[in-house]
Length: 452
Image 1 (tube, helix red, strand yellow):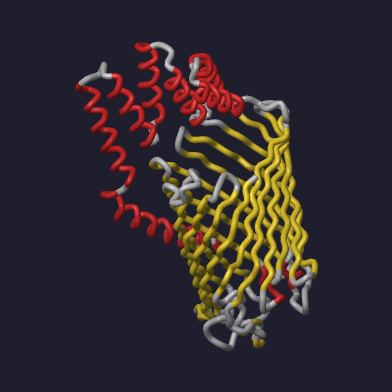
Image 2 (tube, rainbow, N blue to C red):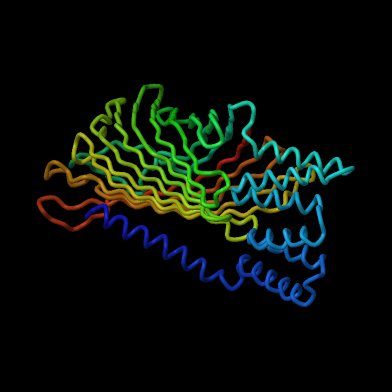
């Protein structure tokens, strides 16, 4: 019941906020404006259905609004009446690729290359796109990026606003409340070894390290690797599935000492939902093991963990994306008061804009987000444990931005504000909830991203 209540109250909080924002913006939303333009273009087309220029204008508006099926219908109609037109064939190949229909895309791109004639630039583009739709001769595929930069935080230790924090009836030593700057490194890597166009062996790795200027006790390094076979449905099927059962290994270091070693198993499920949406779900069972560090009995928090991570992506308008993430986990620790139920809901909006830099054509991405995280801890073992935090609630608001400096390099920015409220329940059967402490933190990160 505790997990169900946690799910209810926090999902409703974020969903209500999202609904209010969307409802306020709806009359002026880009999606509605795009639909209006598409409707006007369609009415113009009805007036002169044989006008090729109007057909092209309607197809272009349909592409901008994300209605790829409508654009395909119009462009295929142009081919029927106008014969092999290389640019139309190329657009159809690109649209079918976007829909995940690789075989249809290959057929149109082959025709586009043949019809290009003396237009060498168009022929080379068709060849490049055609090569990317086929299983490459080299079965190794690698996608990766590395972020590095400086991060300032107003309260990195999350020291509370008020003094007198207790746990188990005893005062808890507190970090001093002071700002700090740290060097932040993050990298992500995905390697796929292709057996054929529907089967592969996938390895994903995440590495993170941070080094603080004032307080080395917060220095952290982490490495997580998952690997397993991947199976996909037919490439020409809209609504494509991909599943990956995998093994997981994770380790971390805190202040130069080994802190965590974890192993587990999991399952990834990817599902394409039409041309503008897709879903990613991951379930993992983890055996989490912490080590005691500098007198902190972290080993009491070791135990079995069940984790479910659900992410949905919807491109509701051209170059505009909404992402909703729901992360839930439960951990059955060695000591009851370290048992954890956690629910985190994140809503993110992503917008691509023209790059203000004249030497880069890759678009600027801006992503504001809001997140709500709730944790419920297990009951204390003794009646004296009055000060133990049995529930925490946190809000995070922020903005991510990526400014491409070229094909491989980007400048990145993150702004974030977080506020956490911790409460405890009374001892000796008293169910009243007391506020334990409140804490806030502001964060600014400036850095570079390298893609390869």
